[in-house]
Picture (cartoon, rainbow, N blue to C red):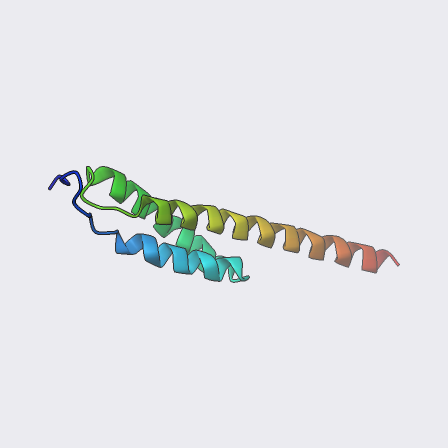
Length: 91
């Protein structure tokens, strides 16, 4: 099915799920954020492969970006914790 210009295409539901999971991951639940990241990439690929019959690539992209931000924050927090523990042990 190819979308007709001017016709509204349905948004991929997986993109919405990925966005919700990515937001939860951003709030500190890293495993949920990683699932959101995987679903976001899968949704984006599915949308691109649909030849215009599915929308929501922007939502999928937002989920991917938010997931990577959540991963970066989690890694920095873990690194800070490890450094703080090492400093505390030496004093």
